[in-house]
Length: 85
Image 1 (spheres, one colour):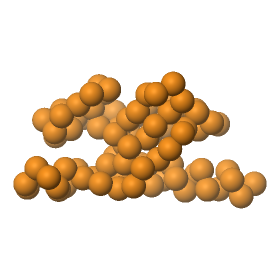
Image 2: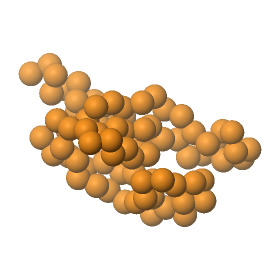
Image 3: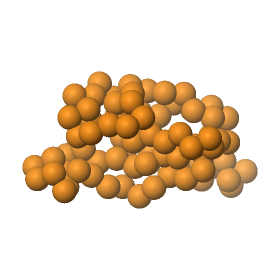
Image 4: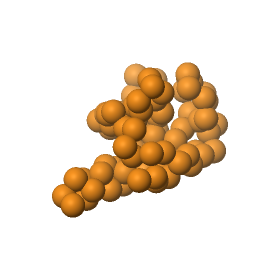
């Protein structure tokens, strides 16, 4: 199944400035290629930048994305629904 997720930046390696300036593009992913979806975290180690929560989405082939937390949570719910079927 394919679904859209919203990510921070479009770059594989990114820093906080990339995240802050990101237009939060949506990408289309194949849910069968997901290897893991990490817990919610943020840029709390950068003082004053806790307003950018994200979850790390890892795919087969080693590609990973910093997903906007809300979008990643929706993805997780979709995956759980798929598993129930």
